[in-house]
Length: 100
Ligand code: TYC
Image (cartoon, rainbow, N blue to C red):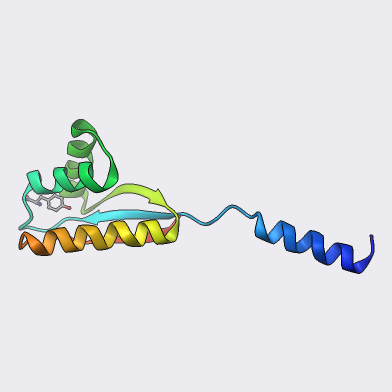
């Protein structure tokens, strides 16, 4: 294959690489109510009441728990929504992300 052709093939390969995903976690704290955390998990992460309760209890008992995995900008937006909603309700709830 000619070099120019190889360059094009490499460019296409790079472009179609699957985008990285980022795992969003919630952190435990002593002040945010369990009810508020369950609502956050349902509202911003699409979990049903049972799944949201289970995730909330995992965070409560183990310190952190997985909310979901998303492309970077979506993970970033969800984290900002959690922080804004928590702040508006005077809770210190924090979320963060890690590359999957
Ligand atoms: N630990 C909190 C309580 O006992 C509940 C809680 C759960 C807070 C999960 C934050 O991400 C969290 N009220």
